[in-house]
Length: 265
Image (cartoon, rainbow, N blue to C red; front, top):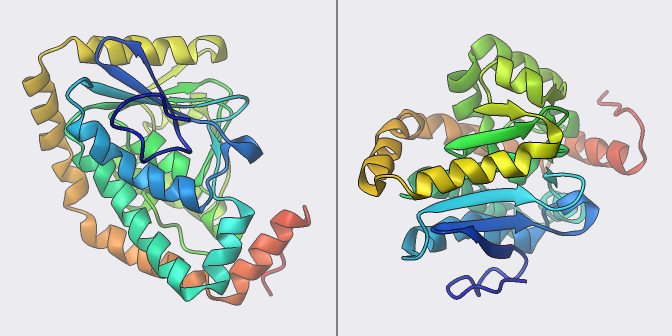
C-alpha cells in the first residue's frame, strides 16, 4: 500500500523513498507479482504521477520476493479473451504504459531479478537504465500464449539488440538470462544476484544528484528513436489484441493452467 503523498491513486503498488530525490515503486503481489487488471491500469498511469512529483528526480522500479513480475495474471488473460470491453480498455492501457514510460521527463531505473515477463517487463526494459540479476529469466511469452508479440517488444527489441536476435527471441519465446540479455544489448547492466537492488539504487541516486535539465533532455532526445516507431507499436498491439479473441490464445492459456505443451493445430 502506498505511503507517499501524491500516489494515493495507486494502492496496488508499493512506494518508498530510499534516497534523496528517488521514489522506489515495488511490484508486490500474489503469483510472483503477476499483473491483474488493477495493477495493469496503475502501472500504465503511475509514470504521469512521477512526472508531476516535485520531490522526485528519478523513479526506481523493482519487484518484491523471488521475481520481478510473472506477467499478466490468468484472470486478466481470461477477461481479455472473453470480454470485448476489457480487451479494448487494456489495449489502450498497454499503449499508455509504453508511451508514459517513454515520455516521463524523469529517468527511470529498473532492478530486474527472477522471472520478468509481460507488463512488468515492459517498464523494466523501457527503463532508461535496466540493471539485471545474472540469473534473471527474461521471457517474451506472447507467441507461446498464442498471440502476436506486442507491448514494447516490436519497437525496442530490434533497436536494442538487432532484428536477428529480436526475431529469434520473440518468435521462439526462449528465455534470456540476465547475462545473455546484457551480452546482446537488451539491458544496461548485469550484476550478481545479491547486489542487483543495491546497484540499481546507486545508479538512481547518481542520476538524482545530477544536472536534472541535462539528464531529462538527454532522455527526451534519445527516446525520439522509440517515438519514431509508434506505428509499429500500434500495429503490434492491434494484432496482439485481435489474437486474444481467437482459438490459439485459448489453447495457450489452457496449456499454461494445465502445465502442458500447447497444441495449436
